[in-house]
Length: 127
Image (cartoon, rainbow, N blue to C red; front, side, top):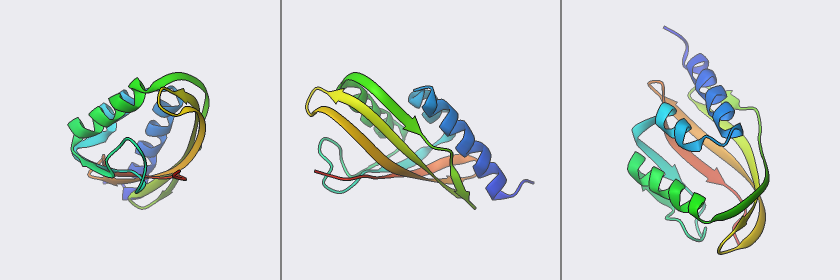
């Protein structure tokens, strides 16, 4: 049996690879547990602070994608892994229907259990 960190490292690397290709839905299908939880920053406009389950996470992703007019650039760092957790710095420069152009940076933290992502949480400036 592999150490949790080894398993977490491979999941983290796969998530990064898919996100760098813009394949967010594929990443969710491949890597997330059905009962995963997603947490946004308190006070972030347009999204509930916490959603549970893949259907709610997929719907949140669809709403975000539907709001994008144009993507001008983006970035995804290499993962930093510690036991069953990893973090990634992500950025997206995009024009949104409701906010105009925003160059956003965030730290994304993920928890892996039994080979699946069970928790994601995003940290970024609000307002």
